[in-house]
Amino acid sequence: MGQGGQRVTVQGMLNYWKKNNVWILGALVGNITFICIFGIHVLNVTYTDWLLGGGDITQNYLGWCFFRNSDWFFPIGLMDNASYPNTVSVIFTDSVPLFAVFFKLFRAVLPDKFQYFGIWAMLCMGAQGAFGALLIYHYVKKKAEAVVGSLLFAITPVMLGQMSLNLALGAQWLILLSLYLGIYRLEMTKKKYMISWGIAGLLAGSIQLYFVPMCGFILLSFLLADILQRRKCIKNLLAFLAYIGAAIGVIALLGGFSHKHLPDTTLLGQSGFNFNGLLNPQGWSQVLTDLPVYGVNSSEGLAYPGTGILLTLFAGALAWVLHFIYKFFIKREKEPFSFQWSWEENGIAYLILVVICVFVALSPKAAFGSDLIWNLELPSWLASLWQRIGSSGRFIWPVVFLVILGSVVWMEKRMPWEAIAALLLVIFGVIQIVDGKWQLMQRQVQFGTDYTYESRLEDERWEEWAADDSLKHVVFVSYMLDDEDLMYSLSVFAAQNGMTVNYFNYSCQTIRSLAAEDLIDEMVHVREDTLYIYKGTDEGLCINTRMEYEEMDGVIVGTVK
Image 1 (cartoon, rainbow, N blue to C red):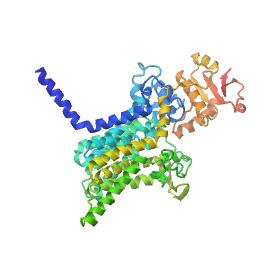
Image 2 (image 1 turned 90 degrees about the vertical axis):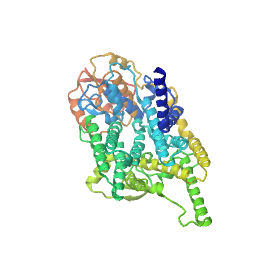
Image 3 (image 1 turned 135 degrees about the vertical axis):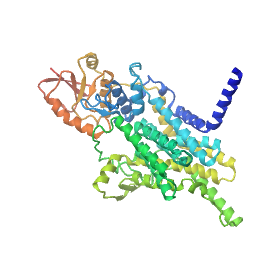
Image 4 (image 1 turned 120 degrees about the vertical axis):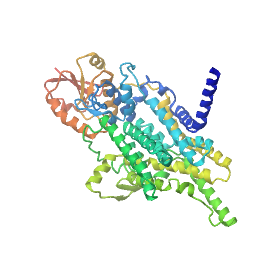
């Protein structure tokens, strides 16, 4: 009986492996890639110093620290100690709210220093490889090629570039998941398709808001394609409602609608996709020269798929031409090609998706190189909606992944011998790594090196204030966002000592405006439980007769007498 049960278990494991080994091996490729680039030290949940080197990654981590220390509110994603006395959602610190809420449930048993961002990044790389492999396998039906091709999804510049700047944006596997759901929509039952898209909406809304419209555009593209092809679209409509409902619901639960969101009018047109984007490496190639760009934040429009992908695309095109010459001129066939594999299988949906994403990513200010091609005059409602998108160039990511998928599949389909296609795929993957080695090495140094955080606050008075239980708040009187390193050092001090700050580097303009308004009243009614922080150059603001001021470490600290 025991032996029979053991045989059943072994057979079940073998069956599971046979059925799922494509995505499992793809995930393994992604995880190995992560370890090679980022190392394993960042997986240590008590190693937090690597997150304190500045930039958005520090914002992500400190957002989690403040959220962890804050009392629970409803909606559950709100905290009041990063914008005291106002509440702000953890959504706006890009701290991966899904993980932040989960781990806050266990904050009583977590170590004082705790971070989940290393685990999160590794999961993202694994999921990127898994869904990349599944997408390729759907078309080529060859497991080895699908697994090897998954590497190209994991090491694409748009993935590695964003994940090393803003960890929440590493969830680009959500785009691949959405493409996968769209491809298999006709094979799923109505219930399964609705549930799947509902889960996708929950994930997008609880990870990073940019993915909500991005994945929504993918679902919309398949819906419109089915309408144009006169297929039954009730399933897609129900899935769309499930997706929107789930996304809106989880955003509301996390407090995303707890205050009116004012758009940042400075971003639109300054961070869009450039018409030369697919061929502009922006530092990701040693072979190709960087091309001119437009806008002060043009890196957000990075769309370069990688040198290996361009070579894959070229090899597929060359094979296509040679095959055409052979069929049409030598064998005299009237129809030398059949495009059924690409056109009937979601070609229209892909075309719609490309049009939507390119249009949104360009923004109203479209440029080729450094030259502005057009600047659209928009109705006020549309301009306001587009301004809420902000970094519109990110919406080119689905197009980049379609280019990667199409390049691999096209080469595999057009090569006359399978062995050549597989070999070329390996060679082009190696070329992609070698050509982008400087960018990869920078990330190895950034994340793989044992980093020790050194605060800019060195004066012994900070330790005295940290030990004073009567001090509860830190108020930034001066504008600190133009000295991010100083602001983060002060925020680390506040977070580590259970104090609040009146504003932080979050992406919600509304809370920043409220903080500026509250500061006026705060300075009229100064409190003994508060440290008032001025920049060292703002001595002219230190005029309150009820306070005494001390200058140290580049700042002036005011306390009530």
